[in-house]
Figure 1 (tube, one colour):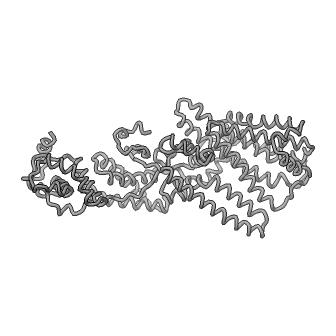
Figure 2: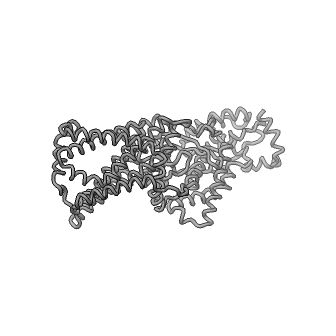
Figure 3: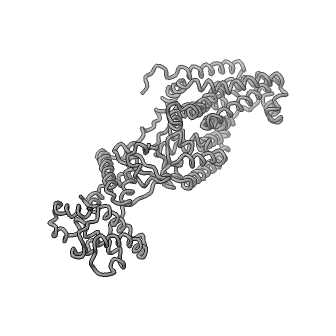
Amino acid sequence: MSSNNPTSSDATAVVELHSAIETPENVVLTYRMAGPALRLWAYLIDTVLRGMVLFVAFITAIVAELAIEGVPFGIWLLLLFMMEWGYFAICEGFFRGKTIGKHAMNIRVIREAGYPISFWSALLRNFLRAADMLPLYGIGFITAVVSGKFRRLGDLAAGTVVIEERKVRLPREPIILEKIQPLSRSDIGTYVPPHRTLAVIEEFLQRRFVLTHQRGHELAAHLAAVLSRKLNFQGEANFVEEYPMAFLARVYVTFHPTLNREADEDLGGSAADLQPVFAGGKG
Amino acid sequence: MISQRDFRRQRSGDWARFEALIHKIDNNGWKKLSGSEASEFSRLFRETCHDLSIVRTRDWGTGLTSYLNELVTKGHNIFYKSPPTRSRDFVTFVSSGFPRVFRRNIWFFLAASALFFLPLAITWVVVQNRPELAARILPAQQLDMMEEMYAEAEFEEYDASRAAMGGFYVRNNVGIALRCFAMGVLLGTGTVYVLLTNGIILGAVSGYIVGMGHGDNFLSFVVSHGSFELTAIAVAGGAGLILGDAIVHPGRQSRIDSLRTRGLEAVQIACGAAVMLMVAAMIEAFWSPAPIADGIKYAGGALLWLLVILYLSLAGRGEVAE
């Protein structure tokens, strides 16, 4: 599946538990497989739940036996059968790959191509549980470790994987960039940092709030030193060494097309004017 | 070129809207969606896909990429929903789907039947002639208990407890059949083992009871539900053998691909066997022990065997699929 995927070779995100697929919209999606611990927790939650339902039903059946002999136990045994063989398949088949335990652990069963699991796949996947669970899920665990993408026998046969769904929020915008002073043109040379460098700075600034101030400066120092050399920075002495984060932010603002109004005035905002500088900087 | 910042400002409204729609569908399902919302969803899905490609190619940071990746992933899972399962599908499955897929794989059923019925017949004949041999297969107490059960004509009370027995038969027999199917994924070995052991034990018990002289009581009891029950065990075994064969003889596919394509047929056969066993359980609970003359039970049993054969060989013939 990933062999005909054009970006799989250079997509750095493909590490053991990640898998990439290409959708009909020609977009590459990466999934994070749910590991053994999450799946075990989900299974334990489901097992406790099923046990509780069966226990309550059993008590009810004992009471009901007084009224109609035989029938309540018959129904209870049918319920026991459904819990043993039907619970997982019905939940996954009808609730788009989720049991209650999986819902609690935020994991979901999907077909390997990203599509929702079908009823028959859910049935196959969970009937084969009977083989996977032999000695204490030993077969399932070993298969999952060997097969890649952590698939047990039921997953291999049904063509499914279990993925982790995380709540991801739109990352915060780097704050107060408007108030940051661009570097003065007289302090720097003709070098223009490439887009990728600016993107790295931007992402760094976005995630700055998860780092301590000191660690932030440590991380920023490397790039700041290289950039100040390339830019031939002539400003305040020790500024780069002492406040590398601030320096990166100022570099970012300086070369940002809409944030730096000064640059627009200097260069007339024309792309044609920018081009030679850009090319020269690169060469 | 537009900057990451401006791009986000332009698009984040749509993303938030898309997120809200996904949330709504996750909680309330498709059906609560209005027409305009549905078309809005598909438009936003395509646009977000496009946004994700842009962000990927321009390297606009892992934070934004994983956010959009998550949105598109969820959208993809909703957009390409499998066809819904309806109760009508179950009826078509029983009336034509299952017998058809069964007949397409008839050779596996025949192989499983040989593995099940041959040992059954052989042990039956051997043990019936020399009942003392049964002790080599089953513990003596169990045999005594069985013999006692069938010693009298009315061996079980026919009362309300039949319903509880029905539940027990469903759980026990369907469990055996499904386990027999599932073990097929271990290269077929598990299925072969379950079929052989069940065949030998059933043969030994039958031979012992008939050999001890309770033939009429026993046969009139088992003849009816045996039709669905024994056939269904072999049907489930055949499905298990398909799984094993898919891995051992994958043909031009990879072994996993072969298991995947043929597993989908096998599970339908196993599911059909489960339905047959539920029918058998009801017969075993309510008809087989009924206080009726043996002659009527034999006639009913013969009719049921005929029904099983006709069902598996004729149902769903001639109709056009879909």
